Image (cartoon, rainbow, N blue to C red; front, side, top):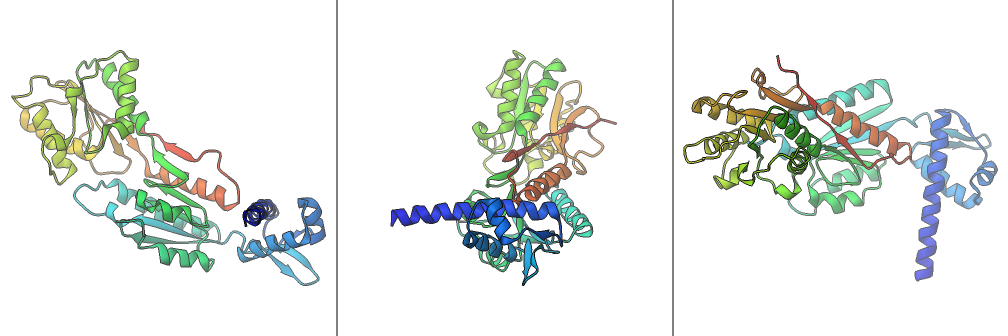
Length: 367
């Protein structure tokens, strides 16, 4: 049994490798082009007619090629016809702690999908899926049926949590994810923005620099780790007491604005003797709430305290209030383009040069 299993695995691997080579050849020649004969393919690929036949069957089912009796093998006119599934976790679209970033990302994904549909033979469907509560996905059956019927060639997934990993790993089509598990991932470079924030605050002459973030374990926060690293590089003192998170003040705070508001009241309240002169706030909505508290307390941003935060291109959060702050923006377009780049590379049977694409922020110019 073990010998037979090993032989079967070798045969599967060989078929997959030959399929990849022939798929690439078909893409290079383009729709309607005639491919070499079966005998020539056997010589070219160094294999048997039986194996070539299996590969041709697979690629014909994928609309990569087709065969005509007594005429030969041709690249399918539908070779560029792809149906893409975009899976978007609905929990990222509603709720008091949800950033406008997710709506911006939704719009950019749809705009790019429409653009691609107009330029190439490509269709798409956006599926809003429920947040996974266990390892069994509520979308598993419906999406797998699309794949089995040959109606889905690739998947872009946004926000699916780690419980989806077993389901993801069994998918037979290319799968690219943002804010979720998978092999091919697009991810915000939080470490980079944390380093930039610390650098700016040190350069502005801040000595007591605080770090404020939402309720996430600090050891797994890329922003925090990047922030600590940059402080160390500048020989600046790190004060653990200036690290603030909402759960340390109140066990239940509904919105990110309220979290920022409470953190500011706590940091600059009469009982707090050590007040920061610079703060990196790791969320623009928390910064929005903190600004309200600063106004009430008479704390002036830009003189009493320097603020660095991250934001999002096109977001209304902090609109008109950025003059005395430093904001590093993420652009949803960068995320969308990176996801499609990975997927396009996988769809032509190639492996991208990197499994994770890190999206960096850019500094917003104050006006």
